Image (cartoon, rainbow, N blue to C red; front, top):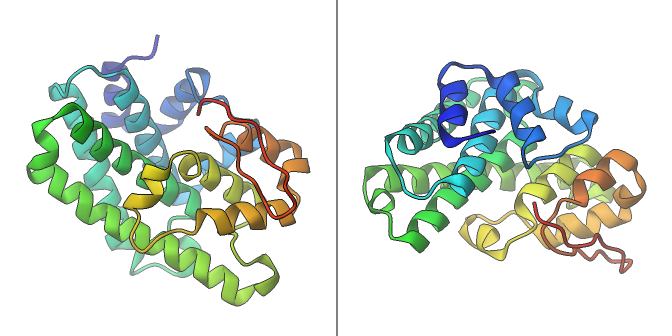
Length: 229
């Protein structure tokens, strides 16, 4: 059974591949191609810790020291990743999937903490989470705008088809997530671009999009059924 303690321990030990495998078996049922994309290059650590924090927040009843340690690792790792990315060539910077998983985890931290009245979101950790989320939001905004500038016919996408499907899985199912992103990632534009690109008909992308928590309707009226993420 996957517990908050196990998620936190695997993250602290840097066993990111192992953590990803356990998360996929316990509530994140992704196809193999999507699993491989999550573990690519420099993004693997951030993706694993972000998805782990999301799952831990679902499982936790209160912010004990184990959960708080994991959330601190999430904020620290995201902040360091953003800082270090400035000195890297564009090809080596964290991709949109890693950014989206971090954004979702930070939003979940703030939304869950505020809904449950957790003091940690009113303290230093909450302040740092908000500041870090602003940096992630800007990076996602630049990614989407940059792709539109380079490939006008793909305006709205944030990468290739699988990248875009994974970002929709992470950020397309709950309006509260989009409301926290400033500058905003244009989710409706991303969904429309995904529809135009026919992602619903590509098996790996369709399997990911089926995990979105509500229908996403594109310009052609096609969508995916709501299903718990």
